[in-house]
Length: 213
Image 1 (tube, one colour):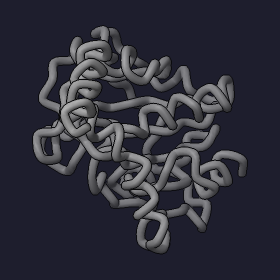
Image 2: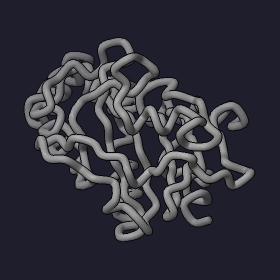
Image 3: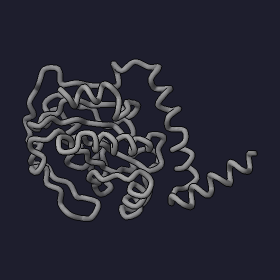
């Protein structure tokens, strides 16, 4: 029986271009999120309760897309934006599927932008081309995917996450990503309104309520 399970997993890996590790992580993701529900959200969600406006313009930012083109944020005016640091070999990688569902649910109103990064335990060591193939083949993502960069507070932190994690730029939040799949929500006026820890599902009530405010 055990050998049969291993054989099935190997077949799935070959068909989906996933490593065995990635296949196992995808399978255990629901259990991982179930465990997270037992803990409170007070330390895992931050909200701009005082409606603070950013000193630095969100729409003046830009990033390099996975295909090498410049992605200018001035095209995002009027839409809510969720920015997420991602990785292919993480226990939370299953959130790619939930992010795509969220993107389709709010298409035209919400833009989701993924920023692959190798900042946590070497969980995104792949090339940009391999990352794009992995995301599309295994999770069918259609939202914008940026080139791999640094998202934690380091000398080479990309400019988008500098803005998201520095209150002198965004007005109130200094929290950098705690792990892969940290989520930042910006409203239609370029104001950072929420931060969600990786353990908060993109389809959770907390996230949905924040989008609908």
